[in-house]
Image 1 (cartoon, rainbow, N blue to C red):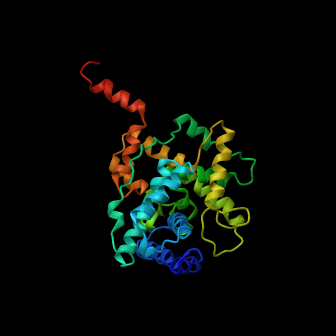
Image 2 (image 1 turned 90 degrees about the vertical axis):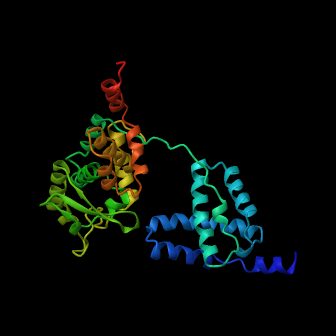
Image 3 (image 1 turned 180 degrees about the horizontal axis):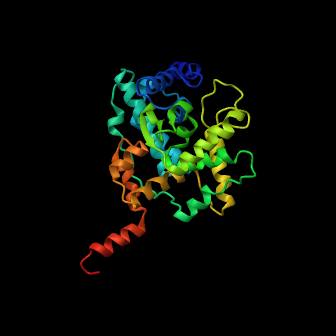
Length: 308
């Protein structure tokens, strides 16, 4: 082992190393990315850093061959194309940041091409399946008002589960019938609430939530038995429990978000409106929902095609 290699081995930093920590701070403070997104970047980049350290590669010595060997290692582990593409996206942002800061001499990010991947169509429930799911909470359960309000709110607004768990009482206006939602990057949007969800929320906030409070200063809308805010894992388990009760498999909070968007479009909603309600920055993300309603496609084809 050379002196330079020994220095590299001895200098291996604890995780996350300073370079990655500065980048993560940049993402959170200056780019406004959510905590969950920053955590995902940290995991990806920490893994890349371990790969470099195992080969005694200093940051200033990073080359395309090191990125390629890392991606090949991910592929050999059996990761899907989508997972490898996500790792590569994290790497490109990190490498560009290093280049801008002058830590590496070449803009490696500009030389890396993200692999194209098939976009899987989201899982969609039929109207009767959604109705069954929303009706699943049993009135004999002491938390049924909360659970019904969660299900109704998710389907009425298309909120992400992180947005639901972050919802506060002061951001819900029952009189006017809307709520203020803070999505990715703390971007705010106003979402109207339908009458069914409005009634479920009002009954929960009036009759159940006050008795669940342990701290009067707690302003989260949805609480656990202990009076603390529900987290994403609890909501995910709740959705899964009720879905299984009505014979549905692989249903998550995001499935309900997909149903919200697809059912709106099937009812004639404008794509731009759905984009705004979902909080998508790029309409191409919303356009995937135009491909999942086969019944509407068939109807339009029958009405418009000259050979029908």
